[in-house]
Amino acid sequence: MKMKTGLCLLLFVFSNALLAQKKPNVLWITIEDTSPHFLGCYGNRDAKTPVMDALAGAGIRFTNAFSTGTVCSPSRTALITGVKTYETGTGNHRSNYRLPADMHGFPYYLKQAGYHTSNNAKTDYNVADEKEFIADAWDESSGKAGWWNREAGQPFFAVFNFNDSHQSRTMTDPYAKYEKEVLAELSEEERIGEDAFDMPPIYRDSPEMRKQFARVYNSLKLTDKKIGKLLKRLEDEKLRDSTIIFFFGDHGEGIPRGKTNGIDLGYRVPFVIWFPPMYQHLSPWGAGGITDELISFEDLAPTLISIAGGRQPAYMKGRKLIGPQRSAPVDHLILSSDRSDNGIDMVRSVTDGKYMYSRNYMPFMPELRYIRYMEIADIKQQMRKDLAGKELNDWQASLFAPRPAEFLFDIHADPWETKNLIDEPRARTVADRMRTMLRTDLTSARDVMFLPEYEIALISAKSTPYQFRLSEREYALKEIMNAAELCGRRGKSVVVQQLKLLSSPDKIVRYWAMLGLRAQSAALLRPYQEMIQRSVGDTYPPVAVTAAAITFELFGYAPAADLLKKSMQSDNAELALMAINYLLYIPEKQPFIDTVKAVQKSGRTYGDENKSRAYKVKAGCMDFLGILGLVPNTPDYAE
Image (tube, rainbow, N blue to C red; front, side):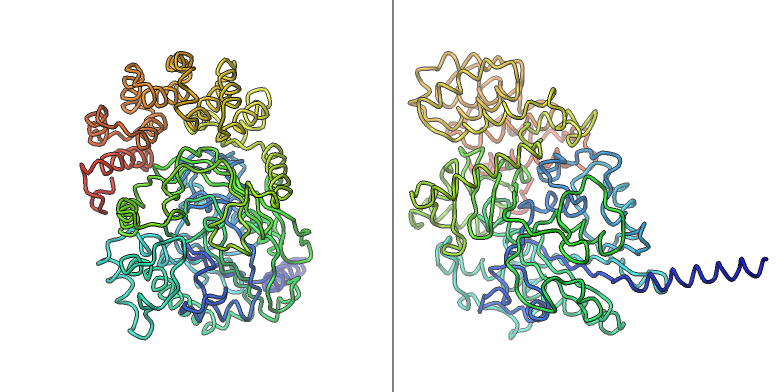
């Protein structure tokens, strides 16, 4: 009897090993801050990216792949959870809000299916208790992690993240550091010269700008070399014939108007899947080629779990892209862009691949808004210098002006998004269709980011934004969205509607009404000065602070200045940041200088272990002081 039991056990182990070996290995290569515009495989003849080009040429190249966010940490929340950030409440960059206890990083489900999971090495998942979250998802996550640490015969899911194309290299680091970390790693033949590429029309074509923009091409060349070394190791270890390779960027290019901006240049990414012959049956597109199928980052977790034979949790709504359980293609995607570092914002977008429609809910701020990590970059400073010197053409200068409420770009005809079609009669049908799609999908998903971050932080202290949004009693999304839809609509009739909403019993409705008034002109608001000033005493701080910003700027209302100073010094980081951001766009800054200096030097941590709250408040203060020339706009003065 013991012999039979032992034999059965041996057969069971053997059969499980065979089954495991039939599962594909998966290598996941991510690169930082890269738009497809700058890779050879996407048609750029100036790029030197032979490794990426060869992978794309032998695999499936996607022309319509999109990040669900426009900056690192929110895009990585969506990647690791398979859930959009406007559902989890994690759309704001480095906010660290809580997820439900049963929401795991998707490699957790691959581990359950027998996979060895390794991450080398970036995490930046933008969630609370990140160390525990990482340990739950990965067998190993470090600079030494890789497939080589798995058990014999065990299938692997291995992620490698290459930082060399990150915004720090392409624009933010001092030029000397870029020379050391990028140029010094390239031979003369490998380098791309400052006169060896076409300058995108969104920038002034000058020697100063070319010097900075060449950083994009050389950083990508270094990335390409490092990817080549990784693929060679896979080949040398005789694993390529059993490994499916995913290659993509984490969001748009790390350049002004790209990363952090809710337009196509912020969302669209290069994306390739390469199948070895052993697993080409999993590809619905054949062995190689090009597809215009729409995909976004929420699709990747369900796809990986499916091909691993794992159990997909109900909270994942994305598509399965490959394999026998493949989901049907979609005709549009909803994308989102929220705060980046100290630069608050809220944009929601719809794309069908050809058109990109974006709704700007904070249009009083420009596309090139103040974000400290960008303001310290030579290229951004050069653009501001050119603006002051009237060296920019009208369109380039418009990037520093308040935005319209809506953008509509034809990406096929206008890949750099320079012609807003929103008021064109010929585009009316497209605009109406996309507005309807946006409203329908955001309502269905119950977008929790219509709450000010002040409120999301309070909710996260007790529950999770993901769960809160599901309560129609607590979260009157329909009424809130009605108020938000007025934001950016300019005119007397809209002002009247917004003023009526200031008496709403719903504090979030009042917030959106006041935020909408922030985008109206002084001439339209002056007749209602007394009514708006009363809201400086509103019991809900985000309403009061927003009213204070309006009434101080337009009417010089003294109590408003007092409230703004008090709010900047608040122990609530989200409220402090809100006040500072409003002051960045108010012409009269003199009354607030001493307060901003005090906040910047205070050393407050706001009880945040990883100091992200303190960073964003200090960064806002440094932007304020930098505008006035009171601190240098250099990396040494980033915060």
